Image 1 (cartoon, helix red, strand yellow):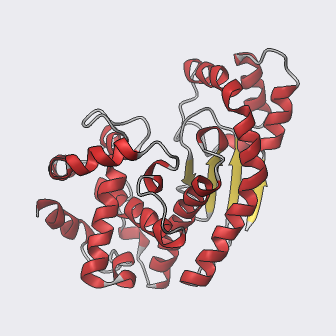
Image 2: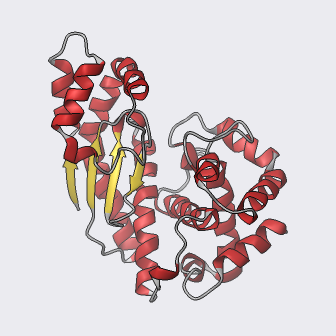
Length: 283
C-alpha cells in the first residue's frame, strides 16, 4: 500500500498562524489543489460558508487530528494485511490522508477503485474506530476485486441507483465486521462511540425504513435521495443520516444466509441484484 499523508503539512501550516482565518484556509487549499481535486465538490461543497464553518471547528479537533495522523498509517497497513490473509486480497492500494473541511469522512474515488481518501477532521483517533473505518473502505475495494475476479461486466452496473449503493455499502460494512470483529454494533456504522441511538432508531423503525426506501427506489433515484439515505447531509425522514447503511447491511447478511458468503458478495455477477433487493424490501 502506498500512503500519502498530507495531514502534517496542514498541521504545520495551521500552527504557524496565530488566528487561522478563512483566507488562510483558502490559501492552503489553493496551494495544495492537487490533494483536494477528488474531495471538492463531490464530497464537500467548496463554499465560503462551509469553509468558514471548518475554520471555526479546527481548533477543537487539532490534537485529535495529530493523533490520527500518527497512528492511522500503521493501522491501515495492519487492516490491509488482515484482508490479504482472510480474503486473498491482492489489490495495490493508494491511500490519501487529508484534513478536509468537515464533509465526507472517507471514500473510495469513483474513477479509481484502488484510491482511498480519509479526512482526519471527521474521524476519531481511537484505535478501534480507526480500524473499523479502515476496514470499511478497504472492504469496498475487496468487494470490487471479488467481482472482477468473478468476471464482472462493469458496464452493466448502474452506479447512480440506490439499490446499487445499498448493496455496496452493506458489503463494506459486512467486511468490516469480519475483519474487526466483536465490537459494539453501532461502531460499524458511526465509527465512534455515539451511534447507539442511530442503531436504535433503525431497529425501532425497520419496517417503515424498508417501505420508504422501496418507495424511493421504485420512483426513480436522484441525488437528493442518495444524500437522504447514504450521505452525512441526509436524515430528514427518520432524524438520522445514512440509515441506508444499516438497511444495506441487513440485506447483505440476508444474502449470506441464503447463498453463503462468496455468492452473496458476488451476487451482482450475472444476477438481477435490483430485483432481488426489491423482493427483500417487500418481505
